[in-house]
Length: 103
Image (cartoon, rainbow, N blue to C red; front, side, top):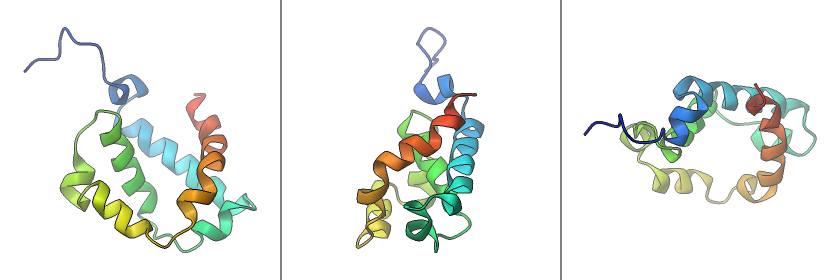
């Protein structure tokens, strides 16, 4: 099916996979300097920003790489179980990524 006559997905509009990689790189680069988030993310594996970029890519209409490579949303929930990261950092995530989206 051709998408020629359809409006772009949010993934396409945002700039594709590279844009989501940059967004997560900027966010995670700022974490060590953030008094609330530094401890919450201190033990994240180095590949975590890339995994988040894959997930965001999929959520915004891009390729389903997170599902294919990592099992999708159920996998993400299992990884986060018992972590206070999602609850405590939601609003801080938004303010930390704002400069990345202003490009």
